[in-house]
Length: 174
Ligand code: IMP
Ligand code: MG
Image 1 (cartoon, protein in one colour):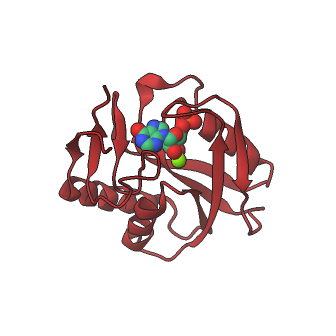
Image 2 (cartoon, rainbow, N blue to C red):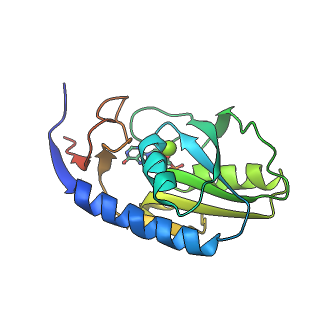
């Protein structure tokens, strides 16, 4: 059964914000050697839009993380089920993530990618659920701060459902 949904961020708002983020990233990384590392699967639509809005081409790679736990909460134990495939040594690396919630996934991934000895390592996320943070992790580029609620659409899923909706919705939970 599909839970009732309320539209939180429209297509136009998403498009405007993605353009703004791409302009900032474009300025900050002009003349640099940027690799974007996306966190599958939720990031696939955001990252596709973001790279195409940049004023230069970038290399891309992907990781996939798994946090043990059921339903809509994390257990806090993160592991990598798919690692990067290109060398990041000496490169300017920008992690691209859909949502930072407790921060445990990003803290883990940042620590992991730092061991590849990149020249720089920053984070760009579409949604920042700052109020729910359990571990501090600096976010360099944020699309939208969101206080609470479980979000779907624009790549974000709830049990693999609703990823392909073009807007971002809040799922009303009982
Ligand atoms: P964290 O480790 O608690 O920060 O969890 C971050 C990950 O949990 C994100 O990459 C998402 O995959 C997932 N997540 C957290 N909140 C939501 C949500 O509202 N909708 C969909 N996925 C979410
Ligand atoms: Mg994710």
